Length: 191
Length: 256
Image (cartoon, rainbow over all chains, first blue to last red; front, side, top):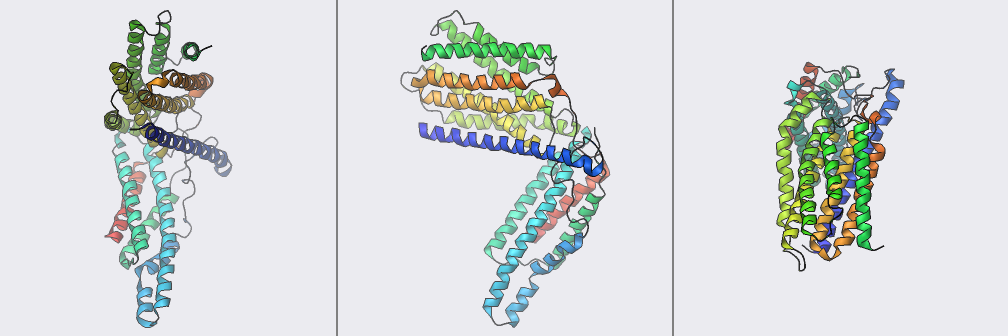
């Protein structure tokens, strides 16, 4: 390995570590922000939560948020347009918009998943010793979610993505149930 | 003052700060908790003090230097594991999981170090082959400890786990400390002619780390003021995990 390659390797590792340090500082800032915010909101001094956990998304109207996604991604409207308009331009434009909006919904879905997962991590982190087996489950879930979202993104990028409506309804139902669960979460407590 | 003299005096300054840190750990009653850290600083002081009257190129100087480096490498591994254990102390489930995976983390870190070792070039002209090999091994151990600590930091940030300020300073400082050691040794084995310059750079960077620890390790850094978390509720957690599984399963069905 030449000196320039070594320097390059060292720079890459150094940049990675600097990024890690930046992330750690960012996390610290988030904690401090959370600690400053929480007491005013809940009247529990000195208690903090990780970022993104304290405000469950869409708890007020969970089903309504994902209902349009069911219809949008089922592809019935696109098929109808293709069959009845006789104008490929309109169908193509519809497809393009459908993919764009589908991505937005997917982004929302990912945000909800991460929020719930962050809460689950906090719960597992504070759990007794015998629940250590839950830690690899959390890893697996995170990995599976990333893999699945990446596959969906790939499908969206490559074109058609028609999903059976029943599956989409199940998915939305699952999110709704999770959001209900989050809204019922107990208040934070100092250890 | 020549560069060689500057290196020697920077080494002494490092030793002096090491002594200050040892006194500080004793004074604040942190020796028991940070016993491996104490051992590491002690080994560093001995490595500087023992050859103080010996000529730099003597055989005994070499023995003390490489003996000290070997001791510090072993202590470094123990220290990294100790820091990992301390970071997870207040989190029983994570601590148990941490104990279970520490061997795998070490094996992964050894693999990373082994790759670096395999890429080592042949001994350059003008460098002692034994010195070259010892430095390569030292660099590999440093990269192993670095990889272990980086994995530990990623785990702690992902969960997230709150750690004592002293511990955070130690982990952060040692990530940089082992990174610079690994980087300098890597450069040194390819440019043995720049031994003195690289040695000075390494000593100055180590001095920076030591000063940082001296200024930031305090008794109040051990006090935990807040702990992040919800009241433990097994039913709720298992239900939540079930829901997360369901979301993944449904997403998976959408894909396949």
